[in-house]
Image 1 (tube, one colour):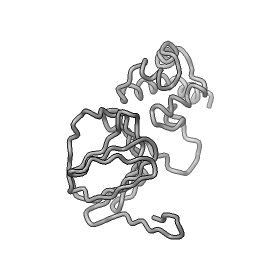
Image 2 (cartoon, rainbow, N blue to C red):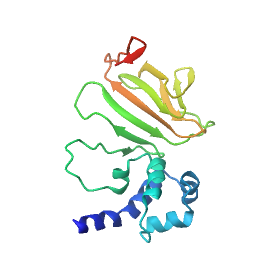
Image 3 (tube, rainbow, N blue to C red):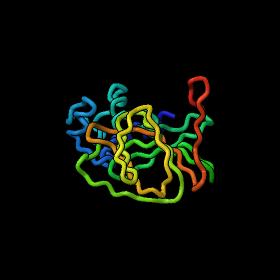
Image 4 (cartoon, rainbow, N blue to C red):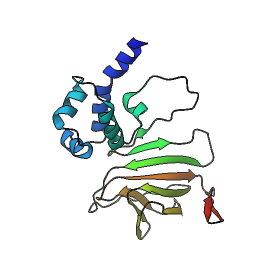
Length: 197
C-alpha cells in the first residue's frame, strides 16, 4: 500500500502542471490566485517538492477540482460514483452530475474570468436550458438580451434562441445547468416560501 501512496504523491506535480496548463494560466497568475510563491509552484510541478495540505487546498480551489481529483487519489472502496470534471477549453471546467441516458441532464460549469470587450459567438441547438448561478456573475446573451446573473438567480430558455454563456472580467463563475431535449423542461414550484424542483 505504501507503494501506491508513493506513486500517487509522485504524480501530483505533473497533475498540477496539467491542470494549470489546461486553464491556460501562468505560474505568476496562479501565485497571485493562491498566495503560493512562483518558485514553490514551480518546484511542486517539477516534483522537487511534495505539497502540503495548506498548499493543496488553494490549488484545488483555483483549479475548480476536489482534493481527490487534484491528487488523483486511489479508490477507497466507497461505492459512490466519483464524477470527474471535463476540461471544455479556454480554462472552462464541466462536471457532469448525471450519468443516465435520456431525460434532463445536470452539469456544473466553472468558467474563468472573461473579457467584457470580447464579442460572444451565439449558438443554437434543440432543447431547453435552465441555469442557476452559484458563485460569481454569469453573463448570458440570449437573442437581443444581454443579462448579468448573480448568485441565487436562475434563467430558463429555449435553446433554439441564439445564446452564449460566459464570466465577466470581475472573475470566474460557477453555475448549475439542467439541459433537456426539446419540449422537456425543468419545472420549479414554490411552496411555503421554498423552491422545490
